[in-house]
Image 1 (tube, rainbow, N blue to C red):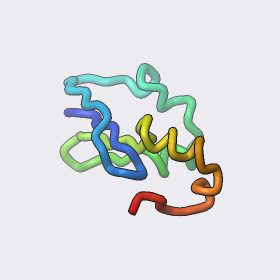
Image 2 (image 1 turned 60 degrees about the horizontal axis):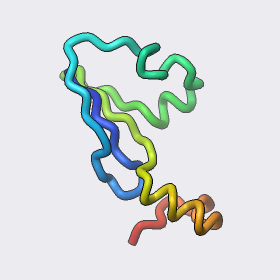
Image 3 (image 1 turned 60 degrees about the vertical axis):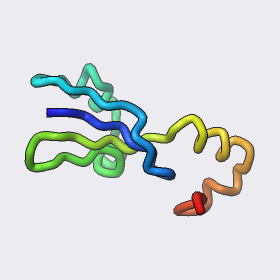
Image 4 (image 1 turned 90 degrees about the vertical axis):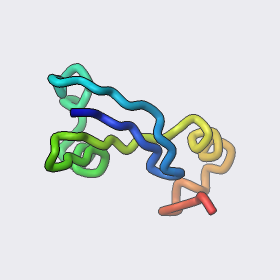
Length: 76
């Protein structure tokens, strides 16, 4: 089983954790609301988990251009 953190905007893989047993509280999933968890965390049938986050480059672009928050996608 693995957990893969991927940027929600550009698709870049930011991190990958390969563990046989993982606790959601250690990963911080327990502090997410149900809506946040549904939006950010995707579970595959084989046990792998994909987490949508924001990479540093995309966060910098959002910081420089606050109007990008209104867009579904700002990466061309």
